[in-house]
Length: 339
Image (cartoon, rainbow, N blue to C red):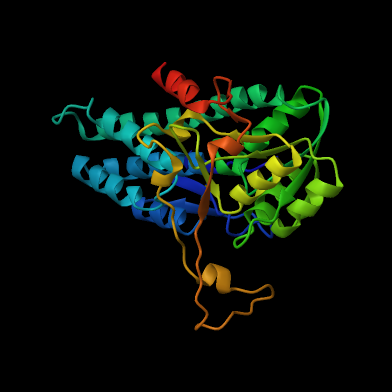
């Protein structure tokens, strides 16, 4: 049984500390929005949908201090991760709900409304993931082997997962699914999180280094590559964990379907293409650390983008909770977001 990633316990927020996985399962107990913000920034909680859910609860923690405190929490949480659009989507939802509470309402009214909205966001994400999973499962053969990158599972969402949700739903539909998971340098979300998560659920999963994907696709049958997303532009260009673009290029070369699985909250119709997606750059020490605890010299110049953008032309379908969108994407995305 996988632990709950984000949960409200009494008057505080519990977050599974994913920095500690797979060696141990520990939880952070947050009583202030600043603690939630730091947890997001340091990747204790990560994955675009889970970040949005945690941020919504983070605002709820501050509402008992009044509207001004809650709005300050919104501003603080909004600067934690620039690429994951679900964060801003969830914060906007919370702000809109706050506007429904009169200024002269009792002190606990704002808290109740924001807390209920955060719980609704979490519940809707889980329900949406299950619908997305069913839509994606229909694209897979009855007996299949898939490749995934980073972690787009229950650990990154309100539960079930996006890319891994497709895999779970395929198995629930009676299909046989084998998984290859790329390690996902430099923080090894694939090795630390995806393999652990799938093993907890009894999947046949094999770990490989990121730079082994080409040899894998050439030498063994891979039926699909399935990844999540942190932001999708109006034309279908998709930002996801760094390394995704490489896998998309390889899949195109070898004729393997490349699927993106993401809820509609991940789409950003205000951006015409992936060129406009802000790409977070993280600390050089994430790359400087060596296996076994050593460090590369300080004088090494290091570039550490957290995400890359995969061109829509490389994507076979974008799987959402409504159904899969197929190329050309712009019209389908516009139609789905307008409903």
